[in-house]
Image (cartoon, rainbow over all chains, first blue to last red; front, side, top):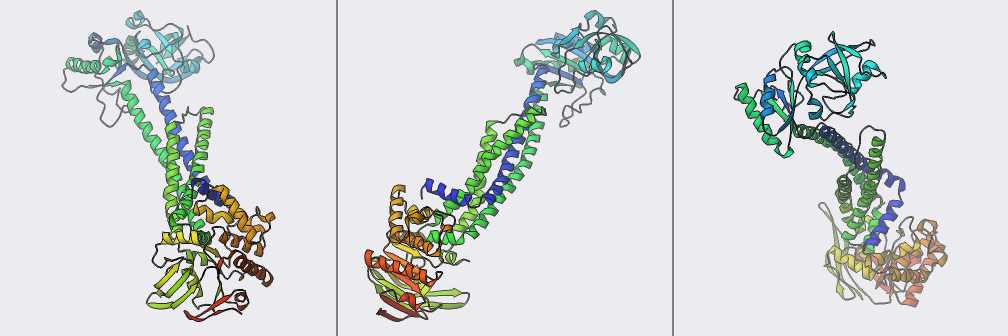
Length: 403
Length: 227
């Protein structure tokens, strides 16, 4: 029996039971479709997060006070509680070779009131002039905190776009005055909206001079973060080691009482989280694929029983065991293959819908499509094998007699 | 052409042994039209299964065209059935919702004959079985009983077998249609020289053949020429 004959036989017998074949295929369609959709959503989320983290500046090292506990990750690093970073450290780090710029900062949350009567509770960060450059941010309007303001306890503030909207609505905030913790500030600049994802979302933030923040608002002389921009991306590790060494020496400690995290670390950790999440989603989808496969097996077993007489006849007119085996296997694989094809289409449509509803920017990768096809063919073979074997091993005499 | 030597067949159900055939020997020459007759339980079905290479005897030898069939494996038996034997069943056993032509070419599909030759041979066989050409593209479920059995006969003829085995071919037909089908067998035997073995329990059916082998309790009771 050659290929085109098997194909024809398969078509005839599947078409004879269109509704049943269709429902069985549906199981595979849903399985494959959801696997593709989940993987594409996961991949999309990963790409999106990668882009927004790279937007923060790819050659950025961030120094936090305290030690990041292994396994706790970067989110719960306990920053703010430890007070080991001081203003003197700025000088030490600036002198290290390969450091292009450095932006020390200290943040607290404060209640902010505008002259309009609107108020908001948000993060106020004391920064120096370099902050804009190191953090890869842009001004939409006005000017940034000047050197003289940073040194001279200037009462100037730069607003993130969300804060500006909260406080002043559609009005121009430049030149207006705001009260942070009952201290008056004048708005001199407005940050360009960055949107997207990030922890220290620059859109929801008020920037004030570092000295003002330390001496007037927070009343503390420590720093909550020092951001370091490295001149050469290839020398990140070297610069990091140097900072580690010099800073530990300066603090006179054996083990560093601070932590240095690069964008790559954040990226790596987040990618890992998202990968885990993607695998989790895909496994749930995979379960429905498995259920679909069992559906195929169920239908094939029913078919074999129903067509016992036909199998007997085929054997009587000369079909060998392997002829019968191949024919029934072909039917199972045909079902899963059609299911796989439609499933890829369905997954693609879901991914496209998610993208066009602007929930998340998905990307259907070629590998997931190949994977889906491979898996569906494999499911056909695995779940079709037993019914096909059962059909092939039927005794022709008993099969012909079957009522 | 067919030679059975002392064939026995024993079935075992648990501890109980049952001899369906107890030493059956006979010869059938090419071009004969033979009826194997007997009441139900006589062993005639078992004999048909052995003659049709669906089963092998427990002891004894069965030669078809000089080849000893008694010792072959399942796949070798399938090969014999494919090339040398055509079956006609009481229950017709056509593929449901499948065209007459597709049903007829099925043995050729397994024999690996190419498409053009298949169609040609199927038409010749269907004409020989006496089916009108208008029905060739009809589906099997659109035909009458008599027409269905003609398609089944054509299917048995199509691979040009040495032996046609018909197991109660008129059992599911009314007597008038049965008569027409039996006439078709007669004609195939007379005009094309086909060797045909008809298994039946009805004397009216056996009457159409030229030789009748009576079987009872697994033994040949009588083997005589008709008329």
